[in-house]
Amino acid sequence: MQNESETGCCQKFNPEPWDEKEHVWRDKKFIKGHVVSFFHMPLNFGSVMTKLCKKIDDAHATEADKIWLTHEKSLFGSDLFVSVSKEVPNAINYEVNGTFISKVFEGPYSNIGKWIKEMKDFAASRGKDIKRMYFWYTTCPKCAKKYGKSPTVIFAEV
Image 1 (spheres, rainbow, N blue to C red):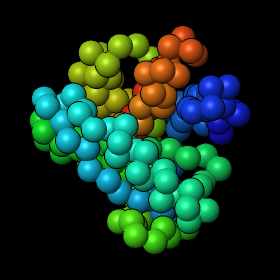
Image 2 (cartoon, helix red, strand yellow):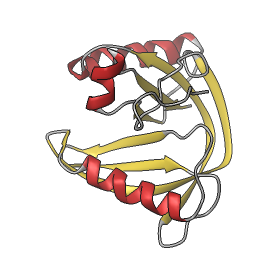
Image 3 (cartoon, rainbow, N blue to C red):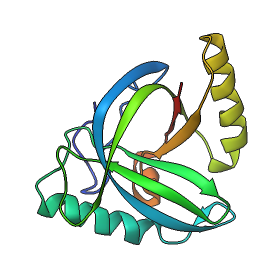
Image 4 (spheres, rainbow, N blue to C red):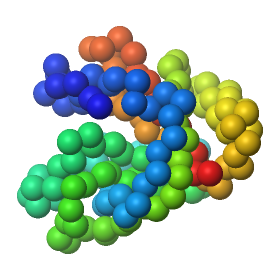
C-alpha cells in the first residue's frame, strides 16, 4: 500500500507489499496507452500519463493503490497500463489475469539489465518460468529527487 503524497504528485513508495511477493490477478482493470521511445528512452511518457490520468479522474475510477506498468515492446515503444477501479469511458480498457511475482529494485535505470537477470534468478529460485515482464517506475523524476530515490518494481508473469 502506498502512503499519502508529500509532493502533490507521486505517492511515497512503500516496498513491503511488492518486494518478493506473489500476486494473483483476476480481471484486474487497467486502461492502456502507448509511449513512443527511442532506444527504450521514453519520449512522451508524461503526456501519455497525463491524458490517462485525466480520463481516470473524469470517470472517478482512481484505484486506492494505483500502479502503472510498462511493457517494453520494442526499442521504439512500450505499452503503458494504469490500474483503475472500474471501466473508463473513451479509453482502451484492459483486464489482466494471471499470477505474477514482483521484486523491488533501487538504483539508476542503467541497472535494468542487471535487474532483469536478478528477476529471472528470483523466478527460477521459486521454480517459475517467466512469460513476460512489466516494469513499474514508481515515481517521476521530480518526485524521485524529492524522496531521494526512485524504486522500480518488476512484475513477472509466471
